[in-house]
Amino acid sequence: MAPVENQPPVVLFVCVSNKGKSRMAEAIMRAQVGDAIEVHSAGTDPAASGRNEESAAALAEIGVDMGDADPRGIDDGLLARADRVVLLGTDARLDDAEIPGIVARWLTVEPSHDGIEGEERMRLIRDDIASRTQALADELLA
Image 1 (tube, rainbow, N blue to C red):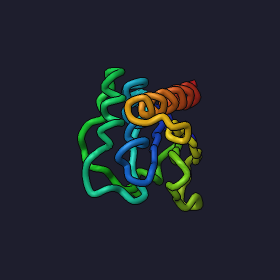
Image 2: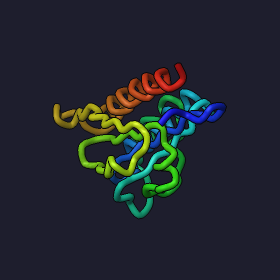
Image 3: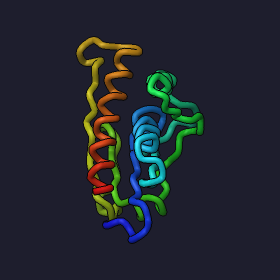
Image 4: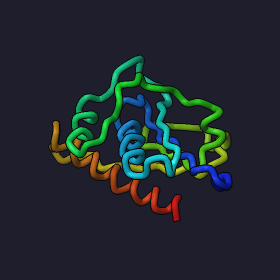
């Protein structure tokens, strides 16, 4: 699905809980591009409330605010108008037949597999996501 003329492209980041990675991607891309891209996030099985505080702290280190809104589920209207849907991790699942936009799956780094935990783990994940969101923004705004 191509962006509507004179309308910004729409990106939806999806993970399972919408507490960490998808919200990180949303906040980082919004900080990178402002209103040039309409950015959202959601979870396939959203948590009842809260956010991943380690994710929020890692973003705050680079001046990005993740916000404190409760996790959101998939909005069918938003899904229908998304130009790009990005599934983060291996567990988030959507029926691709129902998604008119381009779907990508990002298998972000997982430093815990190498014994890296806590703040350093979140910084590595943050930096990986930031690199990917910048590349996606460059592609969509070219």
